[in-house]
Image (tube, rainbow, N blue to C red; front, side, top):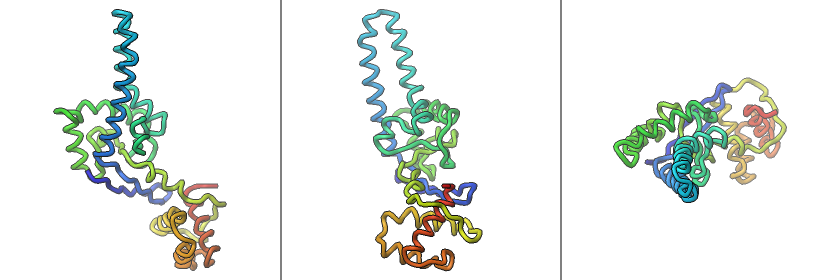
Length: 226
């Protein structure tokens, strides 16, 4: 039930760290979504009940939409977040860290029927405990995972400055070090930034604040920013 870190290397050789969400925050998000669906159901069904059989037919469509369509629409068109996941700062993404698309979303949500067996998400809970990235069976088959938003947005924490190409080709490990440094800059004191940047002065050709700025410029280049 503990959260885990998944490190992925992009085709550009940049490493992404995805903080996989454990069973507890996912269960809390599900409860919030369940409460929202229940509230909408009763708000709609009370007036529809006055319409007789026609109203009940419309109510059945509402139940279907809230049970199956709600999650898919939120995941595909609202950044991988239902209202419950947004409240818990969670997001559904592809196993490679890419935004979730329609087919994987449909698959993972249809397989909730299996994950709920034999009741109270029994299969799903066992799967999250066994899988190294806390995925329920539906996520394993669909090739998706639920992560904490702060980790999926790690690259956006890099200060935006004019990008600059490194003076030589960098290994995947060197690229990851530079991007990680730039991500951590906002949390480091200026003295610590300069201290770390000076370690890479053979690459930047600069020391002190100039070295820090050049490393951040390299990071922006590695992240594909113009």
